[in-house]
Length: 183
Length: 183
Image (cartoon, rainbow over all chains, first blue to last red; front, side, top):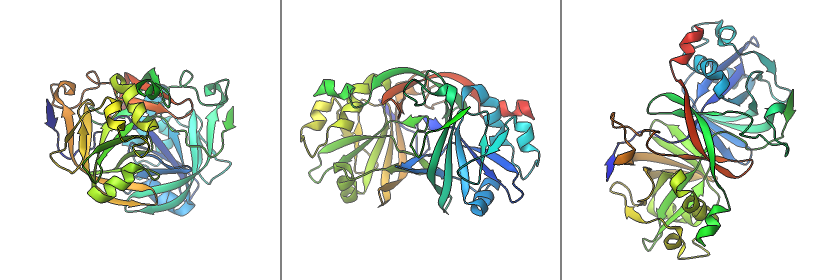
């Protein structure tokens, strides 16, 4: 039996995207967003209402997106519940430190393992579209093939119904392969 | 130390979205997409190149998105590697059966636990935007609060670097709560 839940936004998995920008004084800021993902071969999209972050990237035309991880759940959550408009010391209190991206005019959070460095393509009706210029990865999360390895880092997902952060678990199959069994 | 990986599309977690449509003869079709997510309070977005699916939803103005789960990895993968343009019996072979949505002109996959029923708002430059009209959930995945419960179903995620399907794991924190510890 199935049940209608109405017009909700329950999708699984949702990401935990930490979006970082500089303000007009080059102060770093970060926020937490779940509504976003890859939009094309070199593009990301994030749905955002008005934030300090949106003001910032409209000026700098740049932002980074870091993948939230299990080791920094409290830090990731903190940047989502405190606004830099209310507390100018938000970033110091967040426990995150930053370094300027070598590719775009935006900060990279030093503590998070994987960061997409992006230029703003457009921001219309709350929808940010960015060009991925580079992905920066902490070396210790890379496998022997030089790619991010889920055995070496712990991205988190957002449960939109119970407002929990959930880690990834076991590999359960292979894409472009398991389906062959049904042919 | 950090390493530059270039302009790639490595983001974690990525969803496994099974998009279903009817063709002009009311035959159901389904495909598998990783580039998409919630776009607004009642909207989804998916990035798609030309597929049978795109032809279909431009005619019917409707589609559904089901969340791929661990119990149906091979079926979800199958609909991603076989095109209905090449095999008209794709859906029968997929192992999925469908029922027409009560809300939109699109099929619901009976075997998958959670489905977003959507109307097409726009499809431009490969970007589909849909209005979520209803979410349909199998009753056995709902908790006592009536909401989808991750202890009762197993959504999968897509590892873009190693083409694996990965289940969700443990709860590691609480949104809007863990961050309070840092205040």
